[in-house]
Length: 132
Image (cartoon, rainbow, N blue to C red; front, top):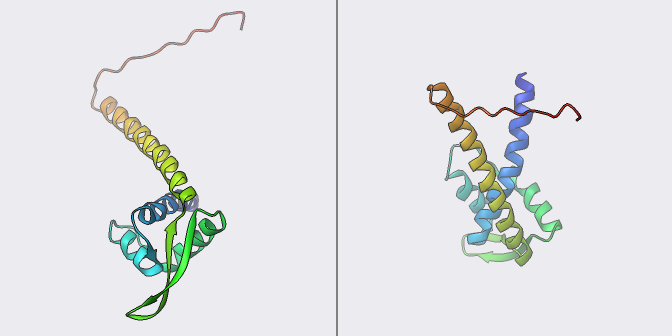
């Protein structure tokens, strides 16, 4: 059972992490470590550079992310990532879908909570015709 939950958490994180990376890149360009700091600084999820690079590589193959090397005043050149025009469009579409799914879960959770508190809920009866 624990392994099954771990697998579900992994799958959930993969999709949401891709969306979070795109959200960060929607607002500004980042190199790998700055992207990790930006994402990890916003919540309790542990995140490492090794986690984001495969996602960035896949997004680049899908032409949703563009990368370029830039000189750094603080050491060696850094590879900066930004969303392409197509990446921005895909992000906006995914973000809209994600917001709808979040509301779905919130509504389902609040309805369950209201039922647990003894609030009145409407019952729906579905009747089928005998001919069906």
